[in-house]
Image (cartoon, rainbow, N blue to C red; front, side, top):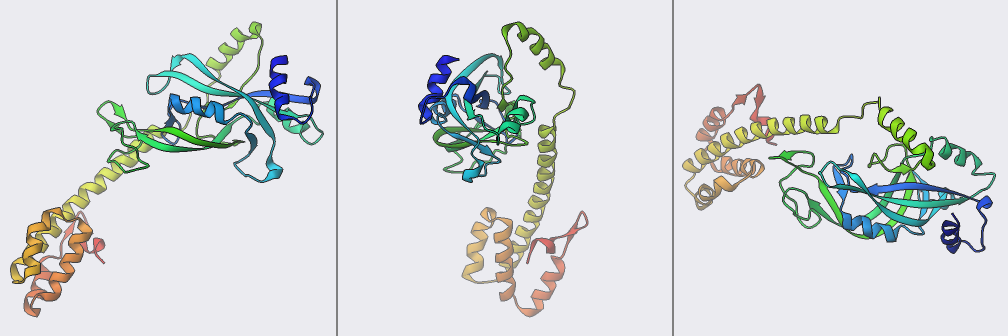
Length: 302
């Protein structure tokens, strides 16, 4: 504890005794996939380890000066024996923070000790957002993979890497990383009991994010099938209009029609209809008015 006090006093204007300060440990982040389907790389954790020393703790990421509550004076990377969701060795960044004991923060200290104020979230800047499936940096260009979706046996998530800065850490109600929060202190003689309690006290089921994302992806896939069908029909419409238009624009469109999106086809169709003879125009519009599954293609055009 004296070693910790020595590190703590590096951030104070005068030396403080143990009686004057309240010291607590907090897990800032880890290398596991979080609720945003993101995770920090091991290299990112190492960078954050250095950047978070001296950073202030606030509430709900509100950066007002009056919200400053505590300060980190030491950090370490803890390597465990268990695996994370991506089957790698689970690691987390633990910090030691302090507050100067005052009348105004006495209730907060009680809430921390009582487990009321526990969950924390961090604010930092990652210049690389790597797709776990294809390795593309999404900060530079997008890829076709959807976070939370499975491709073969690989789940898509974003790996946060190349950390540029760490801003602050906050007490929050619901952190992105479920394990982030104040660490309970216990003596060696209490460890067996606490481990048992931890393993058997999880009666509350967590929100099933994977199932929710799967349902959303299923809906997106269904909508994509309808869009592909409407696009195919719209392409046929455009080809019919090109056939009755004897001009250079129509001939050009015939050579590129397979590459056009639904929105582009819709605009092309409008232009071609304008140049169709009035007697053919009404006939084509009538022929090309169709409904599928109770949905008219008119709802996709303006």
